[in-house]
Length: 275
Image (cartoon, rainbow, N blue to C red):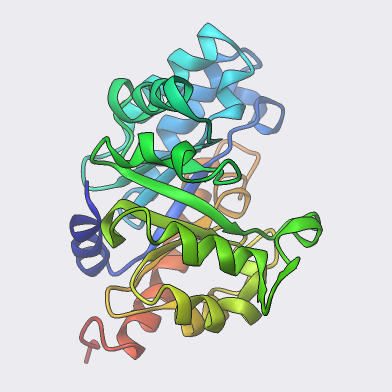
């Protein structure tokens, strides 16, 4: 799925919700069991319950890679469960030069066939290029919500912050449709500055819900003429209940966010209001 197709799904579903499958075996409902296969059973139920309201799923690969071969297979099977009308993100934060970058791109964007992958741009253009050459999307880390973002991302380079230099430079590496950028939901005070630099790119915005980010603030500051946002919620949806009703509750939480997003899309003039 490319960015235009993603926008079409946003309009069709009246949603820009991305559900994060950061599935932790220790947090799953007890009735699912305590072996690694429980992760797949949990993911299948979550996807089925939330897919009417979500346009994307983000699989944090570390939660699967920790289990070796078994975890990788569960990640593959989870990916197969995601409906074709949903955009898929490998949250792998890769980024290396030369043949190493090519192999990462092949693993996630060709063999696993994710639509996109998160990429760390610290090593520069030649660490991102392998992902751009696949015809898929590189989602480049720009401004994150973690406390450590202050260590480097806010360093001044001339009159700009370092994260602004990353945005300015990275946009010269490829087209709008080849790249998205990660901007944490708690960084809304910077969204106007970011939109000045990249008015047309999609932003992947984690941190709404359990991490304290405001959907309304993100939407008001970050939405553009193609919506331009994928707002991710992980814990607030997938762990809405620890009982046997976990999937039902996850679906309810996803529906609440979708309904809020529908209002915001309407207010922005991207979809007609309901009478």
